[in-house]
Length: 156
Image (cartoon, rainbow, N blue to C red; front, side, top):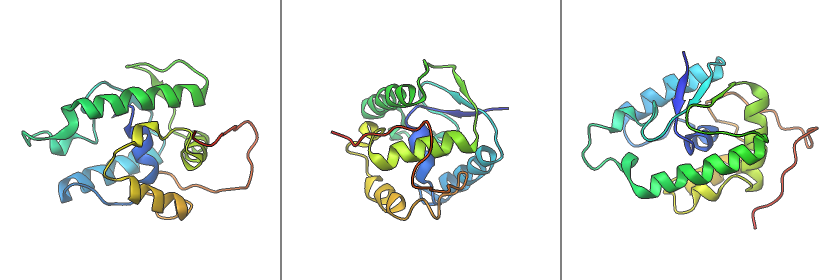
């Protein structure tokens, strides 16, 4: 099986600490965090994904909004550039410690945060980053000062 994620959720999963829109949303996300932490592959999808599932019965769910689609486009481009590979809808990414470390380093440096502009969760994510992802629920992160092969530059 794979965990189906829309592109901006490749970033959101980095700072998930058990907070969310509703108890059902959080419970679902916790299950997905466990699957990702166990190494289940990620399939990139268009539109609502496995994380969105508990919200879709709400007629006002933001999952279909234009701002979310814009976040997806920005995240997909940034993550593809970081991973130095073409990513598109249907691409599958291995869920492993090296991926999460690379994504978290870039996220911490602001390299992959264009998709976060205007997001209501930005201050929470900033706090989690400031705490070196200590309480993040998707794969733990060890933070040596430098890691070979990972180049990050601050957001402009």
